[in-house]
View 1 (cartoon, chains in turn green, yellow):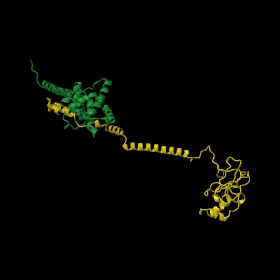
View 2 (cartoon, chains in turn cyan, yellow; view 1 turned 90 degrees about the vertical axis):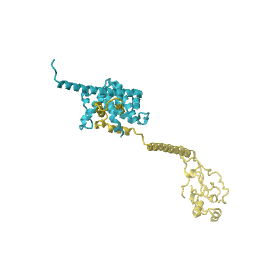
View 3 (cartoon, chains in turn green, brown; view 1 turned 180 degrees about the vertical axis):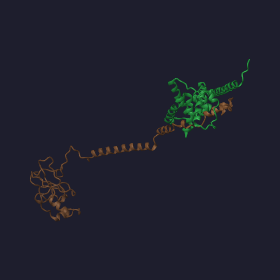
View 4 (tube, chains in turn blue, green; view 1 turned 120 degrees about the vertical axis):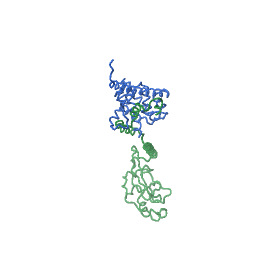
Length: 176
Length: 206
């Protein structure tokens, strides 16, 4: 069904924008989608893009009311050693990993985080994501690439930091 | 993913993050499915057939109202409706051309030789029942005359009896109408005399 196809990416996109209020905003978004479905016209972004646009407007209104940004639920150290979902059996861990990943992406600058969420999580192409964000496709591509690059650098830095720490602990200190 | 081919290491730790971000839907994330389905059902437009039925119902009501109003108007203008303001006279007192008993009788032009000199006759009305009876039962008309003049065999003897007993009758010279309904054919009508003036009209059915 359409809901099962769109809802996971939509609620994760909202989670990256507003945090824990994503579930409520997703419900409001679907109510508006059901109400305005007859006025839907595919203008290049498709239904996913249209739904993401509605969700984005809801999220921005919500942020204007609350004047806050979501915070990361987990530290980057946890995300650095995140196991593969194929090997994870515990559902709770997977949910926590997904939420932690979204929160980690949300630590990026606003346009980069939104570009990564729309392109990776929601599954839109650069053109559709640009329509949702109200920017040019080139700007969205650049923002997404920079965001992913930043995430990769952070993860590498955390791993190196852990490795250095562990190496420092394990290496006997020479007396001078 | 194309993003991964643009310089981002797809085999590093970032791949695990992206896989977690694009993991299949969790049951908790689909908790609002029923509410969404209900919202879509509520937002469904009304069936077209019900709209058509509504339009047809409205048309039927309008046509029925127009037909009823037109029928009432036609009936009212054609005199088919009894108006309460106009009292309906009894059958024996229709506003016919009846004169008081003191007025000399008028003889029917096509009537047979009348045996009475004081009778007033209405135009032929074989189907109209007799309105009044002649006081005293009246006499019987000659059979031969009736057979000659009567060209309607369906009347038979009964009609002849009526003719012998039914004649024009002056009801009430002082009444509002003072008319008499005279049945029977003109050929056999004038056989009885009109009662004296001021006489009470006899009851019907004699």
